[in-house]
Image (cartoon, rainbow, N blue to C red):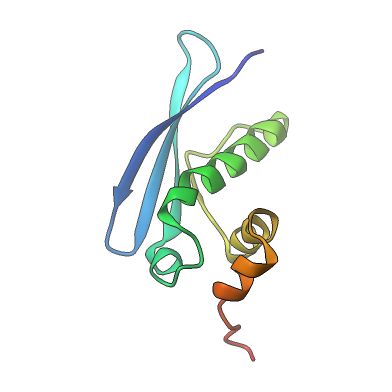
Length: 107
């Protein structure tokens, strides 16, 4: 079965930026899935606005691959662990030095 994923756009809200995707599993079956990332992630420069859709798309494709276990949810939030994993896999050592990870509140 072929699945078509289309990025629809984003909505800036008070606390989060919401990214929307349309998932079509057939010509008649489609549904919208949204992802949220806290605005603080962008304002603290831990992720650029341009990378938000890519991070969400990667999570969506992981969820689609795992969807044999059950239906997709309609909303997901990007976790700190997912953000860190994305940054580790998409930035060079020099960029990581410029934009260090947020210090843990437990430290």
